Amino acid sequence: MDLISCTDATFSYEGNVAVQNLNFTIQSGDYLCIVGENGSGKSTLIRGLLRLKTPSGGKVTVAPSLKPNEVGYLPQQTQAQRDFPSSVYETVLSGRLSARGLLPFYTKGDKKIVLENLERLKIYDLKDKCYRELSGGQQQRVLLCRALCATKKALLLDEPVTGLDPKVTIELYETIQEINKTMGITIIMVSHDIKSIMDYATHILHLKNKQLFFGAKADYENSKVGKMFLGGDDVV
Image (tube, rainbow, N blue to C red; front, side, top):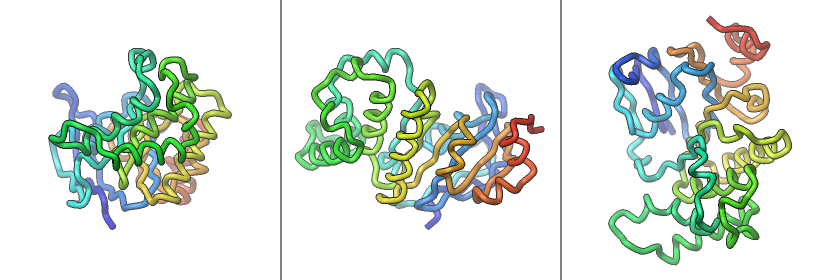
């Protein structure tokens, strides 16, 4: 099923075109990796897919079944967020806020989902610990768990492994892949770590202020753009 489609879409940032010529469709269950150099429009596109930014040209079509409050989002973490003085359980539980609507209290169902996802991400034993006292890898796993509590359909992840050591990076990638495969949740990930992510993604979207490539991973590996980028050469 088509989940999100861009048709000749353009997104601007502070009055200037950030990314244009976007024509792609993300289907339910895809694992899409968005790649490109710094300033190529990746973060602006993510805001557009989250419906926080309206296209300045073309259109973005989202399946009626994908409500705005049914998308889990893991943004790049700031220092202020790293020092947040809440427990792991409280941090993850806040992922259920979007599902609450006007209801002021968390339900038993909300708390059940939190505990299940703490188990799924293997951080149940951390639930009473203070978030800011965790390692970087543990914090990212907690934030992924929080995002997962907000959705059963799609996760948008913006550079989720930045600053993590190689072992922790692989573990997080494997967890995300498991979420995609076992839960059927669509993954849309921005990443600079293209050589590693090729082991997990099903589709690649390559940007350089416009769409240079969109398609299956195998086609990207055999494309001129893919060969240049994976080989470390500049893409024009």
